[in-house]
Image (cartoon, one colour):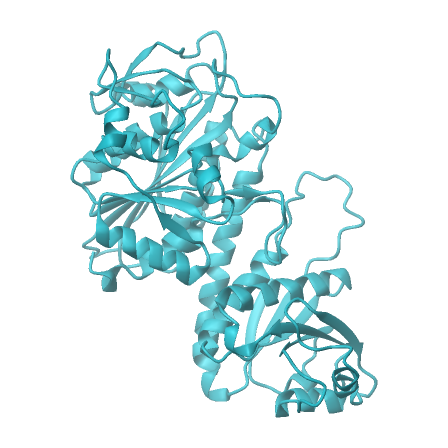
Length: 504
């Protein structure tokens, strides 16, 4: 999909479908000069449907009109945006998704979108999220279908129309940024949506290497022999029951002169059966998404490279398959992590924190970073607490926590600060080893899991994002089909972009 930004009159745009967002109108309302020009080009139809009350600009409302004269747009799709004073960035992003859906339904390949009016948003901000929404809405999770005759053709061209020529340059830069980030989010979605038989740890490593080659990242893949050499006993323990051995993948964006290092660590459980503590059958097919943190990490590093961020950004993927094979680790086993701390296994389905603890320790000791951010589909407890709308945010550093919270609000990927106290850490102490991998009760499961991870970060500023509820969905939205969401790509990329001015 090619996205361009122009300032020409919408009525003269050569697109198969023109999407026109309109705020709430009463039947006596006058159309803006821009919309009035479109109205004249299609014979006054907008005026007629507004005056009759057939279209009121309510949020979610839509109506298709057809051009009648020479040079008029062939189709005009009116999209209600609701109260102009209340339109925010997420609302604008969804307008783009609705426009793309409307174009796909009508099987058109070219689409023009008039930037919506919004009192509290600048043209550049709107252009960025409209571009994001268009790219995100164009993604389809149907790569494995052999018969796609009924699928609408891909939209190849989207033109964003700004009102003022003075806004054109800024809007073009902003739209290019939004396009890049959304494409990186789609990379994460694609990886997370892959079935587990097509994306075991070694293949995830190959996909990460392919992305690295494409955008100029460094890539290193550690196999079992090297993991043993580095004494990553927790990661190895999780993966030992599978015929698909674990991997640790390191991606690096290392621009010359970068003075700050940020490590992004992603949980990469390519399939989670629960191991010996096996999961119930219902919903187990969704456990192909248990590597969504690693998928997001690939997308984040791709964005860091394409945006040429002035930071040394390291992405670490802790990849393993958790299976109940004859060699599988067992409840009651004791694993020795890379840090030297021993871990009593009380439940093999609490495996994500085990692969993460070795990856976090490696990040901390090998790179001595200014901060570590990890992303993981870690606990069902976080889903119970925050649902599918918000990720859990845990941190040992107030400024980092606040930077992530603000970034989430800014890009529409909310992260809510959660407690992590000494009592939670005490719950993770074992009677026979240094730590245990579950607390032994259902209380505060997201917080005790985060507390376990905190034992491996030392004094390094660290934040943990529990994305168990936000990483995939069965409820499609304007910019989101069913399946993987790619959550974390927009959020962490925003954090990295704002790093120089965040005070970190």
